[in-house]
Length: 96
Image (cartoon, rainbow, N blue to C red; front, side):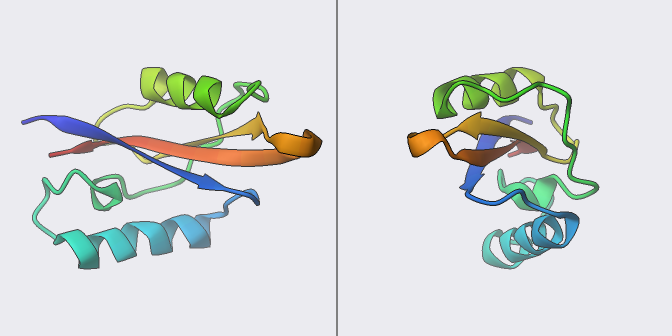
């Protein structure tokens, strides 16, 4: 079976409650079949790896795509957004 990379961007640092809701919403929207290619396939504890703050969204996305693992929960990393703000990129490889 394959996998598809899923990513979300949030202005505020996500927490576990937010992530659980993201997974639950994806399961209801895409099904509970086990190979939806959505965040429904990445339940568990949202992980904040020590990757540092990325220079932009593209760098954060590339880092997530290289470091997330199929069948594992999503990773969340900060990146520099416009006007000096920090946003969060959340990514996972989801079975499809």
